[in-house]
Length: 412
Ligand SMILES: [Zn+2]
Image (cartoon, rainbow, N blue to C red):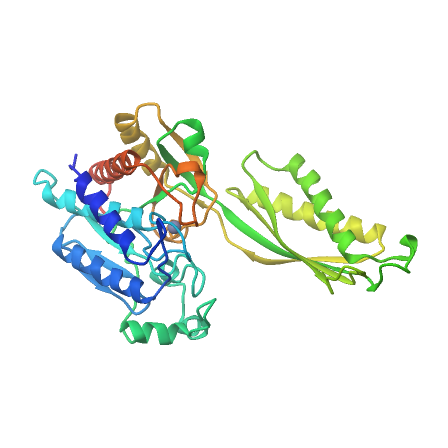
């Protein structure tokens, strides 16, 4: 098995933390000055590690090994959410880089190698998983033309030109080159910490189905309109959300989650009965059958509410990402290695958050592994993981990739 260098892993993660430092976290949005600097820094590290590393026309970095044999693709993303944590993305990138180095430095590991991928804009500053979707050939030029920085409005084309990436060809995955894809990530939840576990082996990444619920009522005076004459869109919406919650509890799996993220009342004033109300609602689960069951229930409940009146309700599906099942063989490999490195302190779990691995899984057998997040905090500058857990995770990740490559039956 390869020997990772724990000091190197911690030193590089701590160095990355200084580029765009914000309190104890990092503010490094996609294609910001700091993000561009870090991309080049990673290319330099990959080249030092003997990889043929370049940045493509959408900001993806790919470092290819010169090994002829069985090659794993590994990686994650390097930009952060605004004013967020130091490990979200960076951890998986440094684990992949360290694994590539450790494999190369071990002369007993002939004929196996690791390609390192850093997917641009996983955090959605310009779009939805642009880097990993581009890598699997699902982003056309028109989508890049349309993409703008969500908070600043800067066109992606302009940002790519400023970074010096414009006009470069985009990398497209060659599934015949890689045995599979491995991504490590912080859990971003508290399941591992609360259960005293140190490694999470992802079984599947949830699909997220999003809806817009609209209620049409009648705007009127809040003092002079008797209760029985009202068509209060706000009240109708809140009642619907309540019955959704009750019905879903009866139909869902223990790990299904649903959320009303935003409610608007129109006109939204203290003394006016809302004439219109609108909600953003989403459901996440790893099983399409459950997502479909809940979606059907959602439509039935809207129908029932319309039958009762007095308002007109409607629901529209805004988007639906498909759940991604992780590769069964890789899951077993991760469990074997986790049992060696952290006996009895690992679990199998779904990923409630979306990741690049979800898209790569459409083309390659894919695995994901989590390390604990202290107090379950992520997408916040206080996000953290203990050094011991970071080092353990790096070992499990590297060993699992090597075991998966050594036991791969068929050369890709
Ligand atoms: Zn992430």
